[in-house]
Image 1: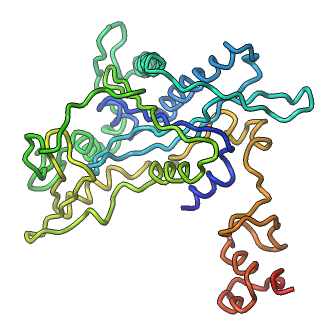
Image 2 (image 1 turned 90 degrees about the horizontal axis):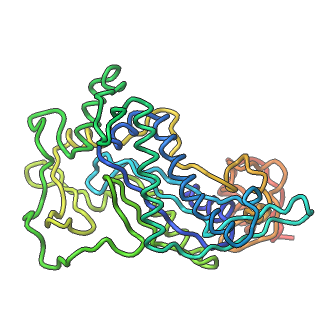
Image 3 (image 1 turned 90 degrees about the vertical axis):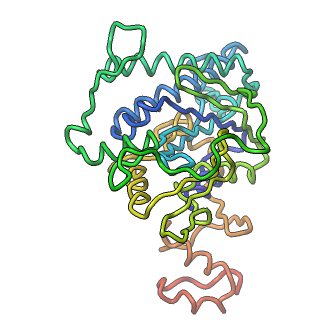
Length: 363
């Protein structure tokens, strides 16, 4: 919740945004889940490829290439709808670039881009696919000198942590790694032969797939709809399991229902308590792996970030106030500050927060 509020209130400028969702082939999901470095390199390829699309649009309008910066915030999700290991990327991009006008003594100017066409999506995905496969060949995951993408068997996690590698590999393939159902597919709920409301499914607008990669970029948010932006980020930052859809049956198994049926009619999965723990263990990130990453003009090191992010002096308390936090209250004591701006009758409820100055509303 704090991350969502921080992004909406303090990071993402008031400009149009678009979500680009990139999925990858099943073997790559496992390799990335077991390697922080590989995840970072694949994310860099995705972020720079999409960023170059926006930069190219600005350049075609006569804007100097070396003076523009795209901006993005990426959420790395490690799970699928069936609590399976499915590492993929939700990238929220600014729908345009910022023009750096520092040398002229002016603030950065936002150059809005046109929405991508289906051809743009297919071209971007083709570049992502080629660059990632080329990178996997260089790192030894795929055989070099072959047109087909053939795995070499390179698996550092299997050599060092065989149990964890087995758990992750089974989760990616939606199978069970340990216990009485070891090696079997996760038990599904539903007929598996389609469902009554099924319709023919097309690729869809601004959606493409190739070589096991898929890209969907049809979700855009207007600049003034911060409520929609917050809902989008809330969805991309959600946890792996919804407790409202998890229930226990009469035999002690756990049924996890989907929000919508799969194309084959599957409506959920059934797991034993130990199998659920196994699936949750596979989705836990490795140590020191950041699941939210900033790129371009929104990156911490960008020279434009301070000039384009929303006004940091404004504090969100249910109403917008032009007040600075009182001396002695740090960023970690927001509860105390919220009480400080309200009538002092509530002050006694936060006596544990320490001594605070009088509320300005009581003056």
